[in-house]
Each structure stands twice: as structure tokens, then as C-alpha cells.
Length: 201
Image 1 (cartoon, rainbow, N blue to C red):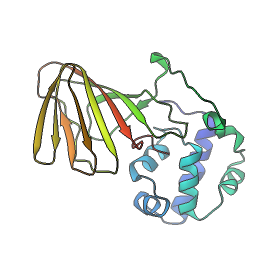
Image 2: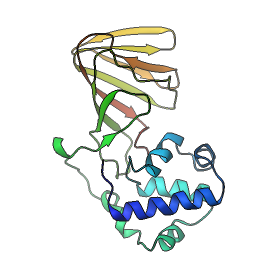
Image 3: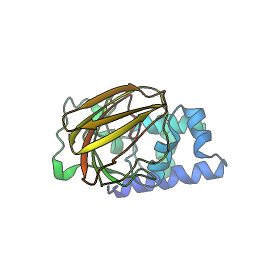
Image 4: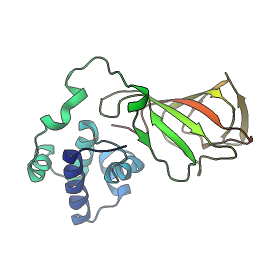
């Protein structure tokens, strides 16, 4: 994913303010009620900062959102974008934004816009043979995965679910969960997550 110059300027200012206040990603997460991984992804330029996410981060930084834009020499109008009332968003396959997840050997793309306020997140995931998703995850919400091709193994707490093409699995995400591809063939998965986790606003 490539962020534009205005986003880069704003992200640099956010990072500067966070470090000046000596706050960690976890500190911002707890104060602003926003996932720590999302804050890190924003600062690394992996996810575009939405207005919703910026409001939560500036709340944690104890400054008005307007002051952040002022210090960065920008206008809030530069970032309103999809949140200004647009009712539908078309994302061409070649225009999907990529998501990098630490410890995951997979190509992950957003099927839903990262800039819009929304309650649903869809991800397209291409998984290499014998690859895994890394560490266990837990977070509030629900997920459902659909195997488009290949085979995938889902671990939910102590249960193991073996899925093949056409199979889907729904689960509550407050349970420990992770995935892997045990086969010698690549796999493609579509994930539905609510509320949004990786591109959460």
C-alpha cells in the first residue's frame, strides 16, 4: 500500500506527538479504545488513517483533532474522503490496498475501504503452502472465513477445524484463534470481520 504525501505528513506529526508524550502503542490503545496493531500499522504507513481512527488517537494524546491538523499544516477536509456521505465504494481488484501482518506469510488485501467509517471488514488472503498466521489472536467481535481454493486449518482454543474449498467457519473472536495451511498447495481465503480489526476505525 502507498500513502500520499498529506497522509505521510500527518502520520509523522502523530508519531512525533506520541513520542513527545512518551506513550506506547498500548498506552494509546487503552486511552483511545483503538487496537494497538492498527496504531502501529498507521505509523508504518501500512494503513491509511481515517477520521475515526484519528479522533481516537488524538483523544488518547489529549489534543483536539483540529490541533493535529493545524500542527501538520493540513485541513480536515483533506481526509474526510469517504466519510463525507458516499454511499457506495467500488474497489477494482488491481487497486486493493495491501495489509502486512507480522508473522504471516500471506498476501492480504482489503476488499472494503479503509478510509470509510464502517462496521464490516472483508479481506482477501492468498496463503503459501505450509504457511501459518503467526501468534494466537483474541479481540472483540465475530469472524467468518470462506475457503475459495486449497485447504486451511483453523485453531479455535483447543478445537481444530480442517476446511477445504467451499467450506466456511464462523466464530466469536474473544476466543484464541489462529490459522495455517497444512497442505503442499496454496490457498485463498476470504475473511469477514466485525467490528473491523486490521483497518479498524
